[in-house]
Image (cartoon, rainbow, N blue to C red):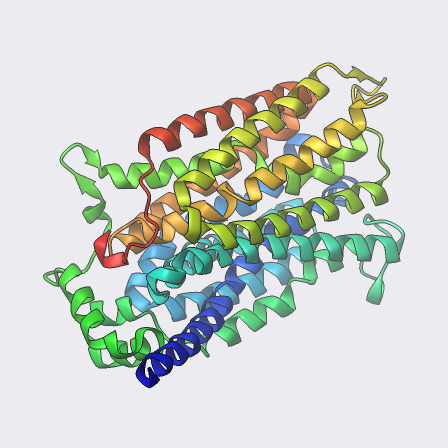
Length: 468
């Protein structure tokens, strides 16, 4: 009995250590969310400050997404060559540089270039965090710890929107209203990302390297030390299991992703998950929601407040995923989420598609239409937040085998950012044509995601990475 109790205490202690380690890695996800959402409160100010139209604003906002696609693509190579920890530090530096540049930009061109730099950091963080967390976590905790990435992302989104709201309220608006040190409020919105960017780099230096990476680099004694804090007495066995899955004749590369007829099927499944996560239109809510709600009659202050409430909904629902992903599995949550998103997006498509318009062509939601759209939008975020938001990151971190994980995740992550770019850059034009059409397209994507999960997703709950 004493041995059993000792093992239980040891397991509890190791679980706490792993949670703390994974939480530090997930700060990259926080910055990912913060960087992509902080632009929300500044979009209107950018239009007036730089006298730019919809197309120019769409491209400047989307510049970060181009950088993210590039960052995700190179992130896997950096992680395999220099290690997961050093790659996190590189991302931290790029976050800081991009933040300073965009906050102090002189025009839309250099603003877009600095957003591109920040986007590279986001792309790197988007692939390194789920890979590292999956590699450091024991199977029994991997789903919940993998969900920390999405929790960090949505917390970052919430923090950014809350900061946007607070600064806009204090300055009396986000445009050219001067705030601290004479800088416009929108510039401080962007500069507010600097402190967490620095903390991310410091935190990364305090956590251990991935044991899978260490074994791949023949640093097995160091890998054992790390694994002892995670799996205790099984460290030696685990090192041997990892060694067997890494056929050490050569280091993994993009060539390993190809089979006889193109990319390996599992890589296509990862790309499909990434693309559908974006094609359902979730980032329209967080990039353009304040502009969207203003277009249907809400004030700037109320629109920012609604966006903050929506981000809180996203955080709460992510906790539901954390509590259930290791109990019910990945596939059931994705199926429930696809059905819910189809229904809620369809409702929004109907409401906006049947709404009247004002003299400027903006939809006018009369009577119950406004509250229905608002409730449907938040229910949509609920359905996404408990399913496709966190579960995709869990699957991408765990579904690939040790040899191809970093590079397959990089390719899937790059595809995700390209899909994000397509959705985000086309929304301003779609908004002009009609919000009913925009949400109709996202509804169709949600329906297609349901078929994709039914046909192609296999359950990974409870499996060790070495079984993948």
